[in-house]
Image (cartoon, rainbow, N blue to C red; front, side, top):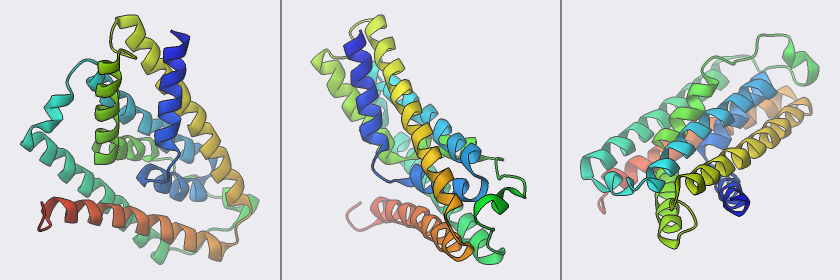
Length: 213
């Protein structure tokens, strides 16, 4: 069981490590509010990871191959990413840059909605859906997970443990990076992360409705 849990932890970290929408939202929230909002985004993303992995392990992966289910997930993903990207750009362009370092803590941290943002991105992100369903299905086929209730539980606990470890590490990095930024750099990074979210959403929309769709 320990090996199964360790496998789940490694799989979770390998998925979380490459920069993606959750990372961009974590940086954007964390630069404004520090450790708390950054961690909440990361913890919210666990909901989607565990949900899709659990569905794969109980044999429901083929459900996502249904055309209308796949289309609904894709449309939701586009909406979430475009909304967050647009809102971030509007906020970065309209407001005065936040003060860097300790002075940035003078105002209330933007905690509201941070957990929900992370959860919404992970639940509607086609990359996350595809990763966990394909990998989860392969693990079940190989007998690594999904064979018994205890094995499945150990694997999911490993995923949660690995993801939480990565979440805290990412939140700490964003928190200390925020302390070193000038207001100008803060605004540029905020703009860059918001633009990245918007690009993720537009790219997904083009993939859905483009000529090859």
